[in-house]
Every structure is written in C-alpha cells, then in structure tokens.
Amino acid sequence: EAGVAQSPRYKIIEKRQSVAFWCNPISGHATLYWYQQILGQGPKLLIQFQNNGVVDDSQLPKDRFSAERLKGVDSTLKIQPAKLEDSAVYLCATSSQTNTGELFFGEGSRLTVL
Amino acid sequence: AQKVTQAQTEISVVEKEDVTLDCVYETRHTTYYLFWYKQPPSGELVFLIRRNSFDEQNEISGRYSWNFQKSTSSFNFTITASQVVDSAVYFCALRNSNSGYALNFGKGTSLLVTP
Image 1 (cartoon, chains in turn purple, yellow):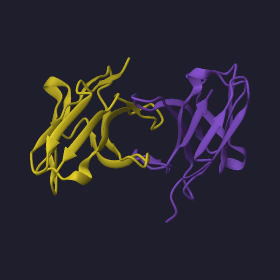
Image 2 (cartoon, chains in turn blue, brown):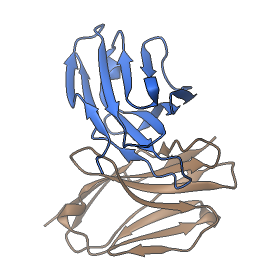
Image 3 (tube, chains in turn green, purple):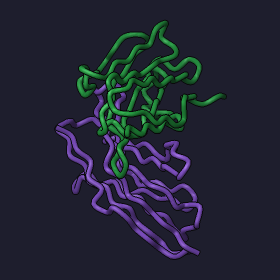
Image 4 (cartoon, chains in turn blue, green):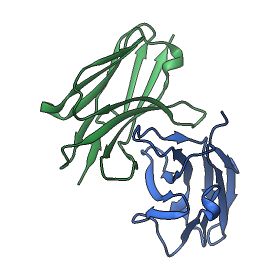
C-alpha cells in the first residue's frame, strides 16, 4: 500500500513570495490533515478535511494560508505572502473513516523563508 | 482545553540502557485517546501505539512498553535495552472523542542512543 505522498520535499523562498505544497493521501482515506511543525516543536494542526469539506481550520492563518481538497482526494496548501516565521515542515496526514484514530503521515515539505 | 506536556526535551543514553519518556496530559473529556509517534531523522512520523481512556492495561510490544495511569494523567513510554536505531524524536499526542480524529501533540522528546 502506497503511503502519503508530499511534494516538494524542500523549498526555499524569500519573504513575501508564495509557495504551494501538494499532498496525495493513501487511497480510500477520507480524512486529510495539514500540520505545521516548527523546529523543536510538535506538529500543530492547520486544517482538517473530511472528503472535500473543511472540518476544522480554526488555527489556519487565513490572511496568508489557504488549502483546498478538490474532489476529496489530493490537497494543496498555499502560503501567500510568506513570512519568516512560516519556516517549518508542513506535514500531511490522512486517516480512514474508522474509529482507530491512527494518522498516517507523509515525509513532509520543509520550507525555508529567507 | 487539552494539553500534552513532555517535560524531557532531550535524553541521551548508552546502548542497552533502559529509558523512560514521560507524557502528562490534560483534558476535560472522559473519552479520549492517547498516542505515541516516533519521528526519525527522515522526518516521517511513525505510529507506535494508541490507547483509549477506558483501557488502563499496560502494553508491551517487544522492547517497548507503555504505562497508562489515569490517576496521574500520564502515559509514559519505556524502551528496554535501547539501541542506536531508537534515536529519534518521540511525540505523545491526545485526541478527544469528538475532535474529528485530529491529534494534539506534545513538544516531543529527542532521544539519542550512543554505542
């Protein structure tokens, strides 16, 4: 079974530029999450999708971050314009619609904002 | 509010030593789930265990064991006879029964096992 795929693995941009990250979930997984992990900290939830609907985006900085999950499969996370404090690893995770609660994570996309 | 505290930021042990990683949680809910994940240098978070709030039975899986105590709101993780490959950052996480499966993570404990 293929795992959660993310791209790009690494991205370096200057502040005020834009960037987009892509996530392809495990086949059949209805729930998809984007987490932000700043160096030395635990992952923090940015947004959660159930199929193509948003379940929780309370911690998403909506003035600069946006995310979509068209057709309930792949998802993209966009940052525009980026700030220095956005430097982090952006992790995508998915889970099936069962009650096990186990999240499967991708390898993450590491963003450096200069 | 719910919160996960991992007070140990970094731990260094010599191979074959036993090591315990502490996790203390706070939640208002009576039904919740606790998790441990491992994050090796490659960056991918790897699921280790899930425990629900109604099951306080300790669990052992090979060299790994978990001690869940609701009385002290703790869910500690012990590695017996540690190995170099155990070197990683370990995260404890909490999920309430009505949070849509999203996890709240602690800050993690970085474990270094040296030969």
